[in-house]
Length: 102
Image (cartoon, rainbow, N blue to C red):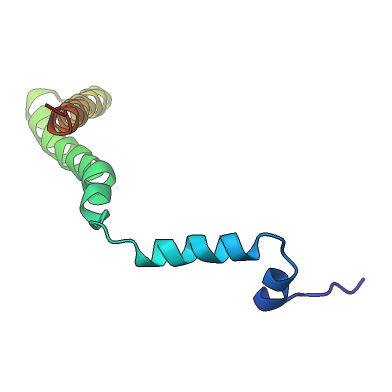
């Protein structure tokens, strides 16, 4: 079976919404706004880095406290999860308080 591949131009020409679609993309192109890169890094990358760092630090600390590797792994994981959860909670509260309208 042979499928006909339409170019973008042909597809847009046969579309009933081509004028409104074009105007929406033109408006989006002209929109000015702040970059969301810092928010994306803060929201997604920072908690991952904090979790990994906390896990490594807790592993070293619990290695000195306990000799049981399984217990050390569980304690390290729970401690790192707690630290990361606290960070996310604080970030969320700061975001909410920072966006309140007076």
